[in-house]
Amino acid sequence: MVVDNFASATSIRELIKKKNFYEIDKVMPKASYDILVDALRQGHYVESILKFEKEIMYVLRNMTVAEIANLPDVGEGLENLIKNAANSCNNLIDFMNLVKSKRYTQTRICRVLLYALLGFTKEDMETSKKIDPYIRVLGFNSNGERLLSEIYNSNKKIQIVTSVKNFTTTCRNKKLLMMLEKDIQATNTYTLGYEYDSHSNLDYTTKLIKY
Image 1 (cartoon, one colour):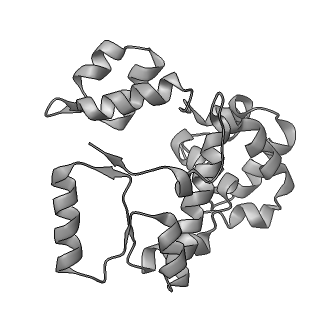
Image 2 (tube, rainbow, N blue to C red):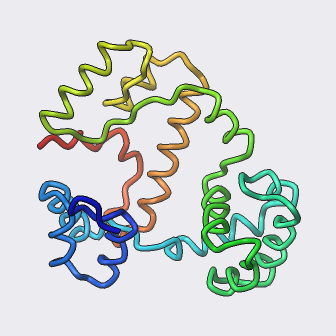
């Protein structure tokens, strides 16, 4: 999908799979395109959930049916299907073919698998819905910097995270810190899918992108 000459994230991922960089260049801002190409060149890109299939199968096999039932988006007996498939498959393609149906779409199942991999529970999901989230800043240009300043000055209760280290040191809200821990865990897990240079704790060491 392309809107105002910019493509959706899904469309860009499809173009990456096809290695169609000419088309990608046309549907992304230049600064963003340069960052993407650099990440691809370094092998710092994970194409699909299949990169984590052994980790996911390991987690599912070690979870009880009750623990699977406590994952977000799981209900109506889906936990039993997942557990049975995990016990009889050793790859995600076969797993998906056993579990997916009109009732349980592949998109929903993929979300559940990521929840399992990250240890995200229904209680965590409910907590995230009840708190005012922080704004996690990864990068900005001059206009973005101005907007962030305006947002902060208009409501100083809004938590803006530009440094994970500083935020974890100064924040006193345990629920926000719990959500940030999930962010950090997700990054550490994602980098396991890198081709090389798979380092943890990048949330603490990666500098803000300014352009």
